[in-house]
Picture 1 (cartoon, rainbow, N blue to C red):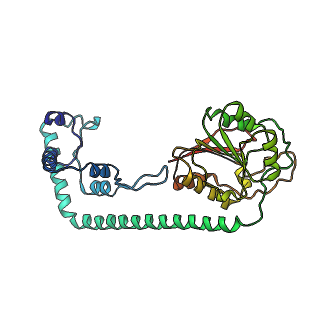
Picture 2 (cartoon, rainbow, N blue to C red; picture 1 turned 180 degrees about the vertical axis):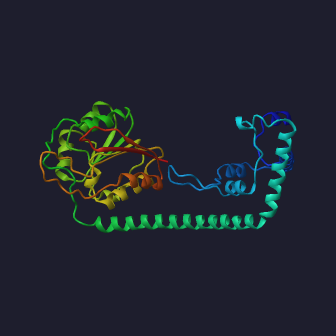
Length: 337
C-alpha cells in the first residue's frame, strides 16, 4: 500500500513543514485500532464542508480560505521561461531563501493571522445564523400559503377554462410537444386540460391518465364525449392524490390561476407526489391573443428569474426551460427529488 501511495498520494499538502507520509501512517494506525460503525461512515460521507449557494456563485470554504492565508509563500516551480537561466546553486539558494522568508513572515504576522481567523470565525457564525433565519422564513412562507389557500379556497368556485374556445378544436402544437416527452404506459395526471383533442391523443398513445376539472359544463362534455377518466374537483388547493403518477401536467396557462393557488399546487405536489415524478408547467404572462388590441389581465405574473430559485428551494431538481416557438406558452419541466 505504501508503494502505491508514493506513486499517487491520496491528497497533497503544499507545505514544507508537513510530512504527508507521516500523517497517512498515523491515520492508518488509528483506523486499525478503531471498530468502525457502518452507520457512522455513511453519516460522515454525507457531510458538506461548504454551504450551498445559488447557481453560478462561488462557494465559501472557511478552511480553504484560512489555509490559503496562513500557508505563506511557495517557492516557484521554475517552469516559466523567465526562470530558465536560474539553475544550479542559484536555484537552490533562491528556494531556501523563499522558504526561510515564508517562515519569517509567519512569525512576524502572527497577530494579523489571529485577527484574520477571528474574522473567518465570525463569518461562519453569521452564515449559520443566516441559514437558520432563511429556513424559518421559508417555513413561515409555506404556512402563510396554507392559510391563504384555506381562506380564499372557501370563496365561490371560479372557472378557469375559456368558454369562447371550440369544444372540438385540433390539438395544439405545444400539447404535441409534451406528448412526445411522455412514454406509453406512464400514468399521467392532467390538471385543467384545454378544450382540444389532447385527451383523445392520450388514449390513442395508450397513456393511462386522469384529468382534473373544476367546471361542471366542461366536465360533463369530457365525460360524455371523450373519456371517463375525468374527475370534478371543486377545490384544487385541497387535492392531495398526486401519488402513483409518473407525470403531472398543468395544462392551462398557469398565469390564469391566482398566485396563492400556484404556490399551493407546487408545495402539495412536492409533498404528496412520488419521488422522480415529472411536472410539466406552462405559462405566459400575456393572453397570447393577437386578434384584438385589448389584452386581458391574467391573475398572476410569473418572474422567470425567481421561478427557478423558488423551485430549487422547494425541493425540485432537473429544472429545464424548453425551447418553444413564437406564440406558444413557455414550458418548464422539473422533478421531485
